[in-house]
Length: 164
Image 1 (cartoon, rainbow, N blue to C red):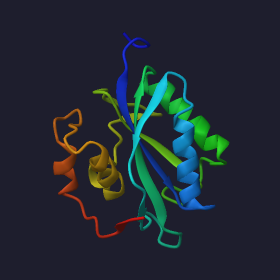
Image 2 (image 1 turned 120 degrees about the vertical axis):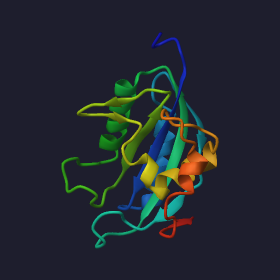
Image 3 (image 1 turned 135 degrees about the vertical axis):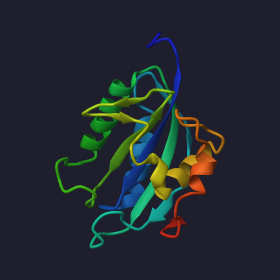
């Protein structure tokens, strides 16, 4: 039953504006303050070339592992509140520069495709800047369709990612 069961969840963090390393570290610390949620582990930080328009700074990326009693929608609302507290303005161009970006990648075995939340995150299987730090935390983790994170990592180009 939701509220009594602890679910593992993984959150992608990224920033390329206003001291990106500090933005990611601040957001990571804020994850530990979410009600009914415990920050368990954080990946190392990585630098990555921008995915969208190239006329923007490189990103700093990481993944956090949490345990939560919150459902996916409630956890996503908490992530959006952290973004807002750090000055993220939504509605700007897709894949453009941003102060902070928090993506709910996985929430237990939940699968959904909604207007405000899709699980697993739609870009999870194609993005090295998500898969590399996720594999640092849980290489044997299987996403809901049964594929293993370490195997998915072997299928993506990581030439535009570097450890910080």
